[in-house]
Amino acid sequence: MPIPTELVGSLPRPMKLQEAYADYDEGTITWDELKAEQDAAAEDSIARLEQTGEPIVTDGEQRESSFATYPITDTLAGTGLADNLAGDGQFFAIFDDGHHRQLPRLTGGPFRYKTFASEFVEKNRAVASRPVKQAVIAPSMLMLLYPLDGEIEGYSREQFLDDLCDEVEKDIRQCFAAGAVRVSIDFTEGRLANKNDSRNPWTNKDMLDEFIALNNRVIDRFSPEERKNIGIHTCPGGDCDSVHSKEVPYEKLLSKMFDLNAGYFLIQCASEEDKEEVYRLCGQYRRDDANGVSQVCFMGVINPLDPTVETAEQVKNDLVTAAKYIPKEALGATDDCGFSPFSRDIKPKHGSPDFARDVAMQKIQARLEGARLASEELGV
Image 1 (cartoon, rainbow, N blue to C red):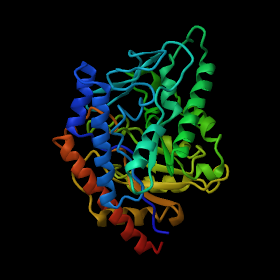
Image 2 (image 1 turned 45 degrees about the horizontal axis):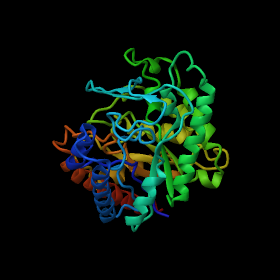
Image 3 (image 1 turned 30 degrees about the vertical axis):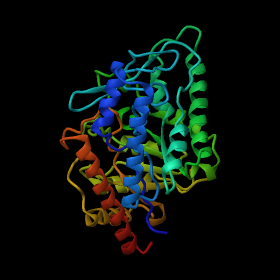
Image 4 (image 1 turned 90 degrees about the vertical axis):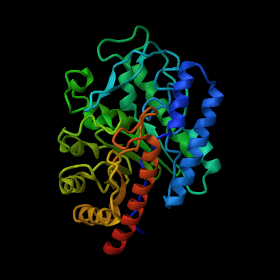
């Protein structure tokens, strides 16, 4: 079997769709009119991915306000917020260019999803001719909805975490039931948990072990056969062509991340200064037996934040080097991050989100061809 390759999830949203999100927030278009723009962008994304030869496709998260908040709000501005939430929560991340992204704040219980990702899977399967995957949010991100200190009257932290795990499990199971062949869990907060940013209080709480334990509470509800197709995505952020935690030593995360009993990992690496050290760490810490499943490392060979398109030869060389440290049967190829995890992102280094969509397809083609060349050279 050749080296497998897989998209993380998001693609840049066309400017027309981004403007529709803003118009919906302003009340100048209806929800149905916004959904029509989402559907058009989703269908275009799937068609273009299939043209590249991508073996498993997504809609590029065109129907989601963000990878993190799709279950609980219709837009980044908080239009259509779910019950028991207010818009003034803590920062999820403060990025290196100075901008930030904010989460809602839980005001009471019970916690329930408003939207499940299976809705996207059903729509995508109706227009796709190839298998479909779906990215979902980790419980470790959504646990930040609850106040860091103290408890909500009448709704304890443990009650919330129980409800949260139930909703995330339901999200994943419904994606598979709707026909997704893979479900990857976004875990960008993993590296950020080691940043200790004084402007962002949760990063000072040493929460990585807590994050991993909570995520395993959900992952361990699935059988080894199911977990072969449940992945974990890690990156140092990717929004407006900026990052939030790339300066954090990667070993702080990688030495613990593989404690997650997932079957595969989508691992940012192309933008690292010392890629070979990342390969070595992944080879050292991945497990042949993670509670019954052998872990596969999909190494990032494409940098979505840089408009320069990688060559297939460059991708091939990276994968051949990775195979020095990671068993060939446990090696895959991916992109460092989603190409645009938030719905309002003009991709400043690219000049426009529409141009960034074209660049993304060129980069994906390079990943696919590079993985093919590496498979030939490695004899897999």
